[in-house]
Image (cartoon, rainbow, N blue to C red; front, side, top):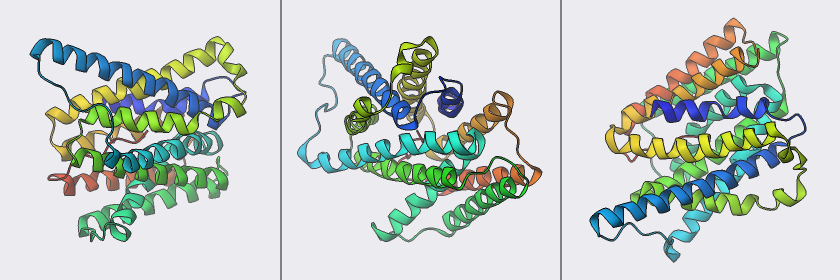
Length: 300
């Protein structure tokens, strides 16, 4: 689980270290296409080996009609997350962009459960979310007031990424509650997201794919931060308690922030560090209420 979270946390830094002429939409589209193909191939191999060893039928592979709307919603969340996350990290920096996106995700999930599913949030969730939101606000304010790297549009993009994560996580959770195998559900949702992002492969400039750094970036983003990371994540879910799994995924924002500071020479003011700590603490507290709930997928 920690290895998966560390892989997730390298997403923004890998994009920042890639070719200079990339676009957030182009990077997001190519990442999900490569990652979706990798997941489909990996799941197919796993299913083949399982059938060969046991001779028993494996989990359903083709989505039923009743699953189509949920899969489409999850794909839309993936498609929204990609360009907005990369735009947010590009404009605001990897540390701030990642923390704002991940910190706002649980809040959007809670709003969805309250307004759409009519589920009353627990006091623990309200306290944890309030702490994370306050920390995010402090983080952004510290950068604006300290002459640091602040971009209002970048913050809005990161918030949109958080909303995309909420949609994706809620759809994936619904599939898991319908007894769909987690790896199959991930393959469905990422494939749907890849299809929605296909037009970007025509409209966006992709000349950077012909460079060595461009190929390395896409290979890392697609195969490491999607295919391998989600296979590791799924394996972790089978052996860990839900609360433990959610807490361990906090290695992602920590990795992203450290990578932005160490590799990209980004800086956070003292108040920014306090805000980041509040966000991580708030996210950790959200794991307290998940002991009897199916784990939500990690952020993209």
